[in-house]
Image (cartoon, rainbow, N blue to C red; front, side):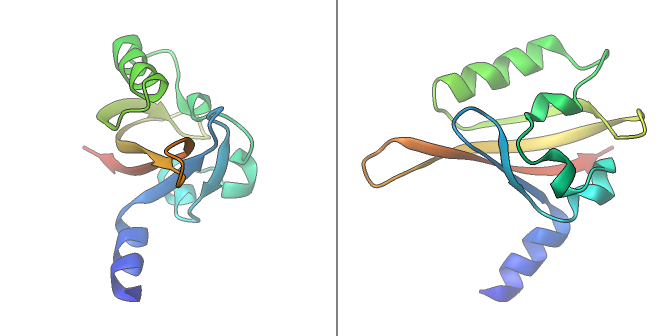
Length: 113
């Protein structure tokens, strides 16, 4: 239903990647969270948002989940376009085609305190 989609889009940023983890789609509201417009990030990898204080253990756990085609949930320190840091809650999951192959990953994201 449209109300549910609208509510989700306002509360969460949605990022879809291909199987190589290149960003294929991002909702317009990503600019409010990190300063990047969807056009600026399409084709790039989400690790572009990581920086010097991003926890390597967290990124390794996410990488392993993706590699094993598992869902994951984490809070990670990301960086905005202007270089300032923010905590980002991410819930990611694989998207399977009818043959059971992973065709995309989808991540729901929001800034948290």
